[in-house]
Amino acid sequence: RDVAEGRCDQAVVCCWTGTGASIAANKVPGVRAALCTDAATADGARRWNDANVLALGLRLTSQPLLDEILDAWFAAAPSEDAEDRENIALVGRLDEARTEEA
Image 1: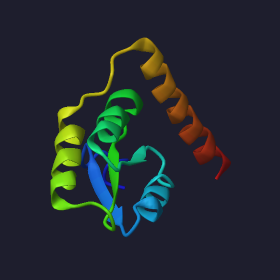
Image 2 (image 1 turned 45 degrees about the horizontal axis):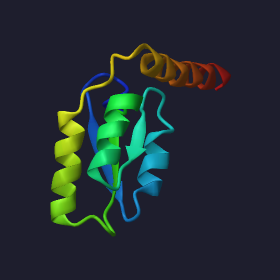
Image 3 (image 1 turned 120 degrees about the horizontal axis):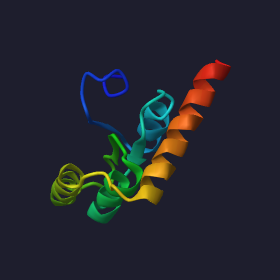
Image 4 (image 1 turned 90 degrees about the horizontal axis):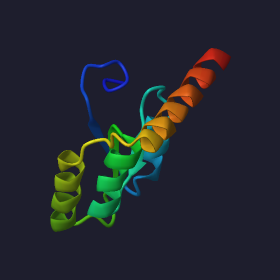
């Protein structure tokens, strides 16, 4: 909720598989959580999806892999490409529609 409410820019959530943490985080409007199992996925999630919450699975994430994922996540910046920005805006509109229905 801190990300969605603007108290922080990004967050990391984790559980044994990462799936539950990702699902739970994505229930919060404004959160775009991405379950990342490697550095390339973390980079892409930030770059192309402007993901703002990193979800991790503890079961298979070693310390060296975690270091790679975190480095990629925090080094990547959201894309300025018009198509990527439109895709991100679409996700935002889905959030708004879900909030209006509630």
